[in-house]
Length: 382
Image 1 (cartoon, rainbow, N blue to C red):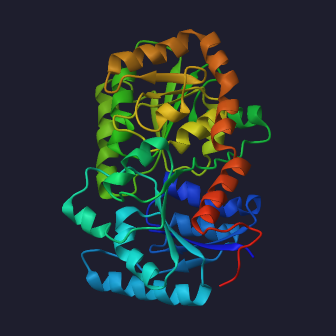
Image 2: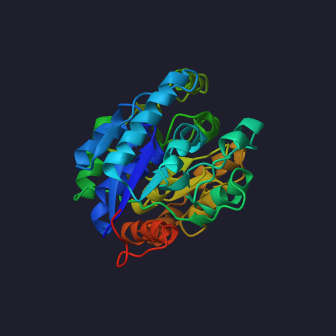
């Protein structure tokens, strides 16, 4: 029998975690021994995209920790769902917030609990340690970087590293897509387009990129596209700060803020360089892998999960918080098309080696089977 897997997530935001969950749903035929279902607390883009794949999606009710009755309601909804659907394993994708809300209900039903570590925990507080007192049966981390910090929260819990499967739906006619997107966004065929595609959070390095581009304002031939929409009040304020900064630096006519986009593959094939100069460590970096899969060299900072993805065959790693070094790295790509070509030749191979969908879907399944001490051949129904 197959392994019935219930994935739990918040659902109110959309970023790398949510991209991964949608990928699990879309590519479920690549690991047919897993039967995925999803439980969400909030309506939004994630629910819409999961629904479009045809997987079962269950609504648990909006949760606000400051309103304890919403926590109790969600736990009750989950207990009913567990009794009805009888999953073999529940995978939490919503950090310690989700662990606080749901772990006790899952353990009470004696169902295997897997904590998927998408982000390394900060130095845990006493509250964090109290939340983590209910130990999962397994932790799966999205990178070695993330895995290294898991013992801070869950000491002595087995931890597996599984890179995320990444499937990029490249347009069939790359050249036509490139021409159409550039026309839509006002870039000439001869322009070098520098693309940033990530959440609008300050540690992603947008401000550092603008500082570096400000030093290149007299250098002709480049355009910057920043894709990513503001989803929270702080991000709305941050976006306004970035727009003001671009204006002050005299580059607002060459920097386009594209907002939330659902056509990232089209943007990638229309661009020439992917640049996300993080000022804080990326736990993994789906955006980097997507850029590599599209044939773009990646320019980012030497920290976190990026060190496991980008090497000198397919991109450039720079020292964090150094606008001058970032400027020089961008300038190298602008002036040295042969360097760009050499790096682009290795990108798709690098992306496939790390995040091939067939390989990584099976690795994820193997982690869950190992945790359940069973294989597809001997798994029994509850």
